[in-house]
Amino acid sequence: MFPVASLLLLIVSTAALALPLQKVKTLGDVPQKIVKLIEFSTPSSPQVIEFVPNPYQFGYEFGDGHGMKQHRSESADEQGVVKGTYGYVDPLGVYRSVEYIADSQGYRAVIKTNEPGASANDIAHGHYIVETPPAAVLEQGLLFQRNRNSREQAMPAVQ
Figure 1: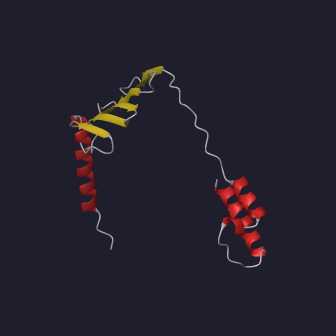
Figure 2: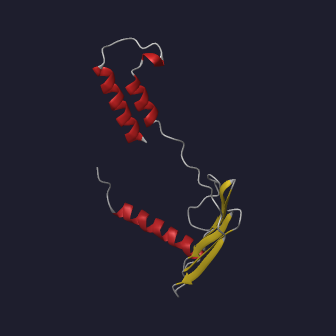
Figure 3: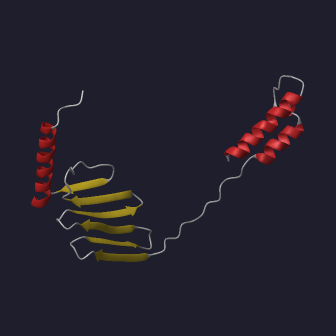
């Protein structure tokens, strides 16, 4: 669309500069060559393509044998409503599970998680349900903090 409009503007402005300067009060005062060019170059309305929902469903689950698991399933109905869920669990028990729906009201999700640092602040159309991370994960965070503090104490600040 932009290239067509730019080309049209270039042609019309060039044609206008070639004409002697005169006031144009009505469309009848514009040379017919320019009027025909403008009429010919006016884009038509875009074609409307009807969306016909095609019902489907799929899903999978897998793991690595060491405690990591992932899953996803999704389905769509005759009205085009899509529903699904996906998520994972890591070997320490940290998980995220998302249930979603996409329909005429938009995309909405419920996110259940115990990921460290997650907060129950609903963002956009997502509702968060947050639980405490597993003890082993919390302990890792505490160990990291202790190690960082001891490293900072051992090294003088660079100035």
